[in-house]
Figure 1: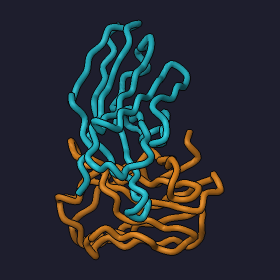
Figure 2: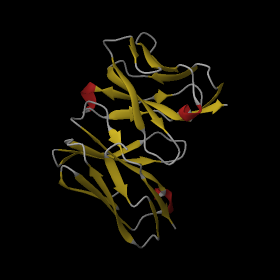
Figure 3: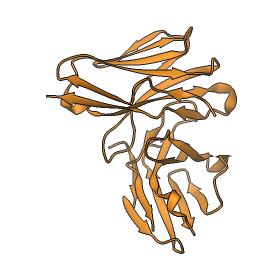
Figure 4: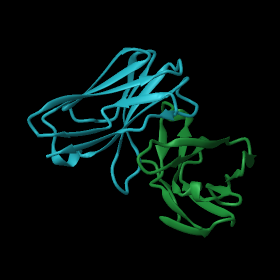
Length: 113
Length: 112
């Protein structure tokens, strides 16, 4: 199967600080990436996406960076809030495999008030 | 709310039972999915339906049987499950298969 993993299983940050969650992927043919947030008792929620023709994309308080050279994806959350506490995972889409998404195992982010 | 609902939210069943999970999407999407989420494992894609036709079946045991009667509804019929099938079962939908999926809240299944 595809290797989509996260460097750290858990991350704790102080409220107001910036958070960085990383994701590595192995297939250079991956052309579309998504970050999801999953809160306890809920399904994954779309945060932001990026296509392989871009290096950076910004949303509200979130930025995704894509480094295709080292097959690395990161999610940056600015001014982290207690409501950001959740599991975050990345998903990659490889266009030549029938458009199936491959998901990482997730990083658990805890925001300390 | 994501526009994808799942019922029931929790289900406990014995290994000889037959039950069904239901998913409904109110987004007008044309693709629907079933995923299995186990602790500390990546989401596992089980089935994909596009325009009500099954397009993906990732070597899922026959004790799981999907049904997609129309583009808004998706079922997962369960029979003679094993304890290792206990997990969170997530339904998702998308407009086409190449863009982001919207997930329901999941059904927490426990097989005893």
